[in-house]
Length: 341
Image 1: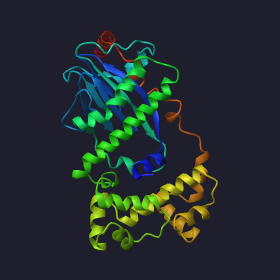
Image 2 (image 1 turned 90 degrees about the horizontal axis):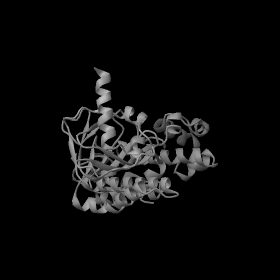
Image 3 (image 1 turned 120 degrees about the vertical axis):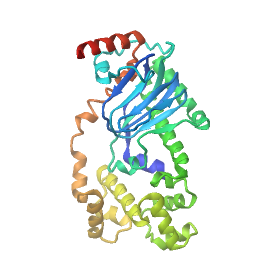
Image 4 (image 1 turned 180 degrees about the vertical axis):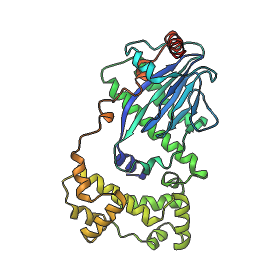
């Protein structure tokens, strides 16, 4: 399994909400601070994306995709001068069975999903993402065109099993967006995600992912990628943001954490398979990286899932599944303003 697939498999991005939504002309909607990753793309029209704390708004054109890691409130607007309508107000008043118009002049229609990372150490992925990831090159748009069109069809013409298909399409969009961001970030991004685009650093990471239990040393990894030990160590730290041995230890502990929760293997078996000769040495490394002992981590698998990650599923972006028409948005924007006077 390639490194990106391996990390996503461990972090288990789960669709919190997926579908499509419309922003009417002359309208702005504000979302609150959020967890997880937002991944949406514009199917038709255009809108502005602005994130609190970032000075410049980003213009999203048809075919553009954006990723937002966990962060502050943000707005999507077809008119930057429009008074923003609170997303939660619209969600509480929207009707799930309302038709999607998506043909109003000046409106913008988007599809995608909101994903919660349920695996341990989500920052392993999120630390490599900018506050706004904007996918906009024509070649990148072409790579995502099929999934965008397919999701639009599923949302506009619901069929049996459509919810599951929509979730899978949103997940496909997320992986594609990360892949495209990875390639684009090869010009200067720091983190393991960008390192994958570097031929030699990517090869070193693949070695560690393919055989995490091997007794890797700095010298062995340097030889594998055809570099001197000192230059490899320096390049890896500059590109990934951690030393090769730090990266290897963390990857091993993430694998161990997943197996402790999802398999019946003993700690000693897991430790040996990941290159540790003693359970004690493994335990010390695990506690240092994961913040608890292997036994405590394994018991955590039986704890109840937070309500916000279960009962709230498919509610956070319910506006996306309902799609608010132009008249509804304008009338509610007026009522919101009137209530605030």
